[in-house]
Image (spheres, rainbow, N blue to C red):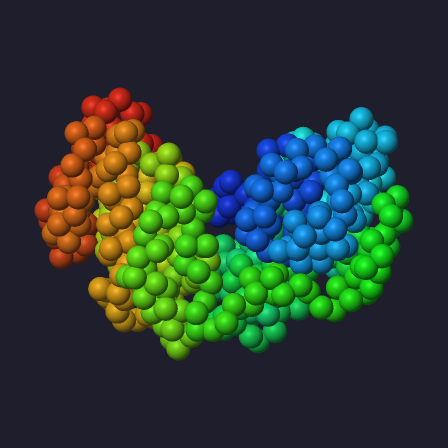
Length: 505
Ligand code: SF4
């Protein structure tokens, strides 16, 4: 039975998930239902990032079900090798495509009943495709993350994915199903991790009964946990191995299904468990659009040193924000959608504050003085209601890139990661936006930010300068109407004004 506290809190849980993960989606790249189906099969026991590296070439080589069905199995295996379990996956992909050709005219079907006919496809994969590619609320995606988070939240006390899904379908309004699954996956992947859930950083902390969470819950996560890839529910993998297919088994691979259960392919293992203290490549944590824009930086010596420095710091000290939040500003405001760049300096250095966006703090964390002053000024300028939180994600979603010049800090040691390379990196961000044709309003508050003015040379852009909102310069900041100045500059360049109201949580 679901926990009564959880049932009562569910509307708030959904609302907070919408704020925390507004664009929640399965993190696989695809352009057609078939591509999503194949990518989802490949994502079993592999990171989404690795699958996304493999699929562009794969999708170009195999444009339709016919191409997979007719492929030489050995060749398809080689193409899938980097995703691990490649022999099993090759057979599954090929047999799925053969059934698509035989029964569905080569197209991915649009009902749960039909999807479950496909070899190796259980409800989770079917829901991923139907929810995501067809926008059909056929159920709630339940992978191991959703399973774990739902149990901890008390939304279910079931253990089997299909029963958990039933509980969630009964509790969560149908119009939220498509959003809810991917949002819970992201919460599980980045916050409510298996070994060390970061409850103090979680937007659901005050609502969650933390069922089954031990004393380790408040501690830092092990280094291999952020962004962890959960294993798929057992029956999905078992089904992948056991369902009979019409593909002829490749003789040389007859041991694959038993061998791969215990021994992932080396390529996949490399991605999920990088050696310390190297850490995951910093650039791999950035979203794809920003990676493309900043690609040149990743090859420069300073960036490699920065990568090493950050990894070593994280290995030895508590560093804010957590790794998975470090690039939240970039994740929430895509390159092409930046209308305003608001430049901060250093991440907040106290526990639970910083989450990868300048000036912003997580829900439940008291807004620091600079942010309080900003809210007061907004009240004076536009009559905005002072919100009950300092979580600025809605601004980021409206096109305000909330960028600090330095993106990490050692806990309780302000400016401790200054001059380690971040400034060069964030200068490159400013330069990339400066080179963009579409105008940007660059907001430089205080002397530190204003030194960056020299980087902004494009005539299409505007620079808005004002005093910093910190208590040290608040007298100059208050009444200077800095937000009106931003909106006026946006109007000048033909862009709509920003709605600065932050909603209550
Ligand atoms: S409060 Fe803790 S246990 Fe509950 S969902 Fe958040 S991270 Fe998981």
